[in-house]
Image (tube, rainbow, N blue to C red; front, side):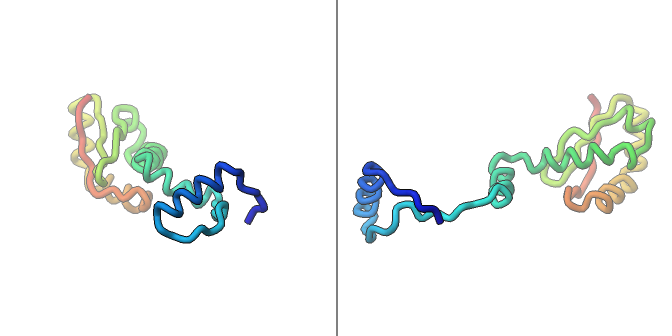
Length: 125
């Protein structure tokens, strides 16, 4: 609780809002102090960057999951509704990843539980 003193304009505005709402006039500046940790989750959800943060985790672990060769020719592109979209450069890489898809999915789910990946889809490009 701070010991701030409301200005004349704040008191007048508060009185008008209280009258409009039909409530008694209470303390004007009686807001709880919030820490940054309290706000980060809300801001991330409102900005829609939660999936991007999950994608960064996947990118960091991608080399260990698929190996060096497949890492050089593929990149996780996005996560949408729990589906990881992986961009591949060559049809042979697409085939290799398709054959290993269930193993890759299991490793992603065990290593990155917080990412919430349900499926892996491959696309050329």
